[in-house]
Image (cartoon, rainbow over all chains, first blue to last red; front, side, top):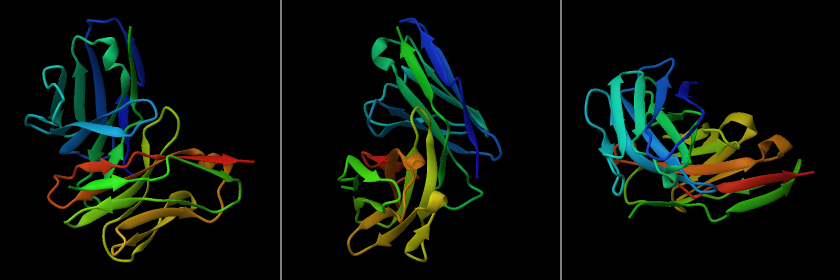
Amino acid sequence: GAVVSQHPSRVICKSGTSVKIECRSLDFQATTMFWYRQFPKQSLMLMATSNEGSKATYEQGVEKDKFLINHASLTLSTLTVTSAHPEDSSFYICSARDPGTSTDTQYFGPGTRLTVL
Amino acid sequence: AQSVTQLDSQVPVFEEAPVELRCNYSSSVSVYLFWYVQYPNQGLQLLLKYLSGSTLVKGINGFEAEFNKSQTSFHLRKPSVHISDTAEYFCAVTFTGGGNKLTFGTGTQLKVEL
């Protein structure tokens, strides 16, 4: 099946710094990628939809100035957590929709564990 | 409103026993249905999906699920579980006109014991 990678797998940063997380589709071109946030022992919460070549669409309640999304190519989307604070600590997961396969199937990356001290 | 419900937050089962993880959805439009598995500190892996056609869907690792439109359910089953099946299982749905967004259930923790 389609492979999606994320980098880094885990990151620890100081409060007030910015962190960039990369999401790559390795064997297909993804015009649409999604960013999720998952709190411990909870389900995934969709943060935003990343569209190649256009602005991301954010879900209600997600601060777009806080979570910057860039989808500059068909295989790469980045999520930048700006001025991170301890409450931003979470597991961030991206997914990519493969238009070459069955409709609406999303393939997920392995996730990035962010810890803000 | 459209929603996905996984009633069981935890399901303990002995190894080699059968298991069923329940998923119900609520929608006034057509849906596509998915089951994903998440192992600790990892992303989600697609187990199986229902898009159309046969209502019985077979997936990886011996899992299968049956789409029941009248009961708006998509329960996941496995006839004989292994210790390695211990993980979190998420039912997810995309709704027609929803822009390919997945709506997830709250997850079911399957714990297989010896």
